[in-house]
Amino acid sequence: MLKASPRESKFIPPPKLPAPTPVVDVGEAEMRLAQDLLFFAYRDFTNVADQVLEELDLGRAHHRALHFIGRNPGITVSGLLAILRITKQSLARVLNALVDQGFVAQAPGFEDRRLRLLTLTDKGQALEKRLFEAQRDKIAQAYRSTGPQAVQGFRTVMRAMMDKGARAYLDGTGSAEDA
Amino acid sequence: MLKASPRESKFIPPPKLPAPTPVVDVGEAEMRLAQDLLFFAYRDFTNVADQVLEELDLGRAHHRALHFIGRNPGITVSGLLAILRITKQSLARVLNALVDQGFVAQAPGFEDRRLRLLTLTDKGQALEKRLFEAQRDKIAQAYRSTGPQAVQGFRTVMRAMMDKGARAYLDGTGSAEDA
DNA sequence: CGAAATAGGTCAGCAATGTTGACTTAATAC
DNA sequence: GTATTAAGTCAACATTGCTGACCTATTTCG
Picture (cartoon, each protein chain N blue to C red):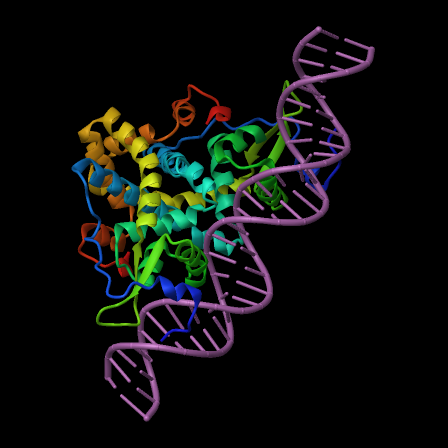
């Protein structure tokens, strides 16, 4: 017997296990599947960059910042915050590390000099490229193996799954601040 | 001027900002977009459950455990570990909380009594249902607004994006251990 | 002009969730 | 009967979130 503990009282004697995934109707099963798909696809997609990150002693938070600065050269700190949905203090830790290590450069805004426009340095672009290439292979393989029509559907549904602001941001009809 | 700091030296005077997202070829742009889609869709999808979780002082880790126990009644601890890809010690914290609060029950295995078969209690099922319903609405709306063909493509690509083991697990042709 | 608002930075402490490493118990397998 | 396996636990630590408080530089606005 395992060591006695208060939790032991929660043991059910010979438990009639519920049928695997009791499904009420077809609609529910579809949505349950969608939950799983999002979890596994995201898990395995983000995973492929981890080896490179570990080499450089960076984390996923650094990768995210690097990615969105690369995608939006000249983005402001506020813009980045809106995309990542984290606090200024959380971003600062990550961003300072990236600046200190020469991956990211800051420049004062043109008209409004309070702004800090963020860009990737050459070194930052090189790193971002390495990270991208790992994920690119995963996407390329998935896209090739499923065909353009499936890809179109994938994009449509993913878009519909996100908040309105993020959609507008991706469409180029909204700013990072609304993402 | 902001307070002087070593980082200030990284300021670029009047920086010629690179053109937004320099795109080499169509293929690259497509894959860059896929990165963004996965980030935003996952961000906003997971977000919708947060309010319920906060009410009960639970986190996303609890939600994930609850979800996969609900999807796989009788799953073993090892199976859950394989799906979540975290360590036993990390899972223990979360799982013990769920058991202590009466959301999850454990039962010894039938043939192999070393196993702990995990199931949701009625209370656990009720909570999982609440969490599911929040996400269900998001999925339902996305599915309705995009149509069955897009949904089919979405599923196909998401599947292709995940590791082989996870695909097999979802197909029912593999066990949780391989996920 | 001067006050208020805005963009950003920083310090300090804390919470959630991940990690390693070492060790234990109970049960099964060989 | 010994080795292996499934699970649990203790301790320490890392990453990445959070709140609260406060500072500076700059722009906006009455």
